Length: 411
Image (cartoon, rainbow, N blue to C red; front, side):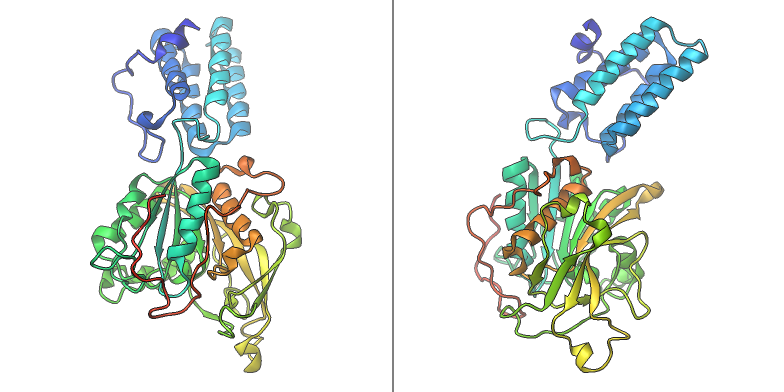
């Protein structure tokens, strides 16, 4: 107890390597987390017992991955190993066990009353599907129910109003530098280096990503050619999110009729993302991502399937090449720098009117929690997705279809 009570005043040993940038910074940790880690450092400094080196490493790993079962199992194995080797006394093991208990109690998934609150950054900018309206709506839900820090980045006009037609800029991309989750909903952006480099830095970190619809063709570098491999026909965006742009089954009665019947993949019905999610009909016309020679990339696992209710490819007799049934939501992982694996959740249903459906909102919010490794925060009935205020988006469409003269609101 004395060690823990006074540990917060003990400096770190000289030569201790600083935490990697993607590990939660000490300045962001709650009092319990700082005391816990400092107590481990103190024990290592005072006693020089090898188990504390191992515990410190395991604790840092727990902070990153929130994997309690593995943490406890490895910790017990660590103690057993050192006892069997005769390198740890019973007193050491008892202190170790106490520190282990504090670790598990203090290093759990972030709560709003912790100092360790996830920062979710929404990167918006598409001319067609009103991401500038749907993403702030989801951000408000995350902040209300989970206390998350949220930031929404927009494409802006010179006067500071939201202009999704400005494909050359997304203001606020630097927020990605300390983000814990990136939510990407852009279309054909041609960003300068000073903005796009924040995206590249985030991807290198191996942190989680959630993507919607046109993120399969998030970028189109007509000007900045050196990033063309991230463009809409490049492989990098497909490897990251699961697929790039191929085709869809066609616009029909945009916003005036359902175009896709969305159902749950039977053997995935117990997946945490699908808690509380029911089959629904979407205004989104079905994207082709798989079949006819095309495959989702990597370890993608479809969660929901879409069936095209109306299809231009069917009318043209091309359903062998472009099947009427295709995945509309999936999970996967991607490799960051050093082969760090990051979670990805993606949904191709994201018409502005789709988000009026409770199941679509649950799918989105559940997906963000899962991506963050916080599936334990998803109740059996799914996340509460009652809309904060009003959500009355404009219909999809190009040109002047977006709401004019709107400035970014503080959430």
